[in-house]
Image 1 (cartoon, rainbow, N blue to C red):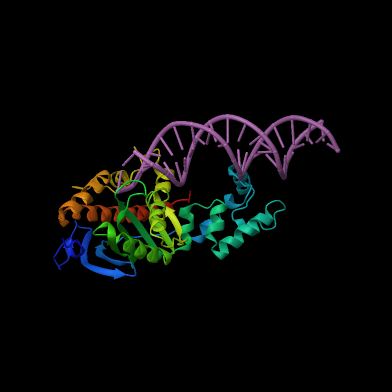
Image 2 (cartoon, rainbow, N blue to C red; image 1 turned 135 degrees about the vertical axis):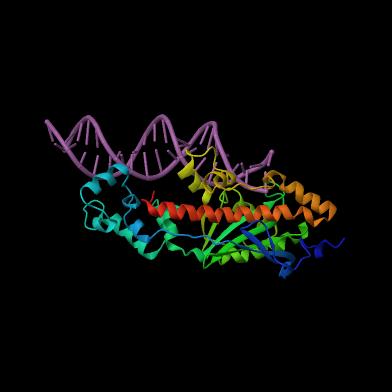
Length: 306
DNA sequence: GATAGGTCGGCCCCGACATT
DNA sequence: AATGTCGGGGCCGACCTATC
């Protein structure tokens, strides 16, 4: 049967996935590796207040050898900024190195010096961020990936592009499309992407002999969630973040563990209705990540940075 | 100069825990 | 279900400071 031509909706009109998400377009497109389906979704606005580089300049911990005790002592002696230490007999040299990295925006080096991912957001603009979330047929990359969602913002306005493989034969095309998007992204943001999404994508790309040389900065929100909320929440799953911090609950969301099952039902029956909840789930995950990041940036820039 | 004490970071190991 | 990451605890060496 003609799965290649199968659309989730045959409807050309925009339709809503709740108040926050509106499907604005859906079409078949092709790239060098073949056809796949693209679903476009407009989201509500999200406000981000990324941290300032000034906060990095005040973080004495970035200097190798300065821990909490020394930082406190130095603060009491009147050293407020890294630049105040430039002439210091012991820390001057290291302070110079750190300052150089700060001015150069060398995020890799700053991360080695101990800057947190959140602090490093200072070097990025919200519109350069690409949020990513994938849906797969299993937990390990011997199984294919069939849906890759990418969210980005322009003037606060969000838009999601979902690359959908309508059968496993289209997997390579959606991977190629994703590799191209990621290669041009300044920063990738995910939830547990360090352990799951990124290794998974790279594994599948290797399998299909695609290049995997995207080296964008990657901010995993799970790590930040655990850092900030480990003791305040029962767990750090994205759904819990939504419920407890964003005051939202999903009505008829399918559990992640059933996604593979739904996709297989779709493959067996050719019934596109089984895909709807998966696309919706993916879009909600992406939008929740964005809202969580918005919350973090507002909360953490109000106060002292961790 | 010798010694003792403090601070920091790098290991290693292990369990918990997110993702579909 | 498979896997990668992370934090905590314990330990150790390097290096600095204070004291005698």
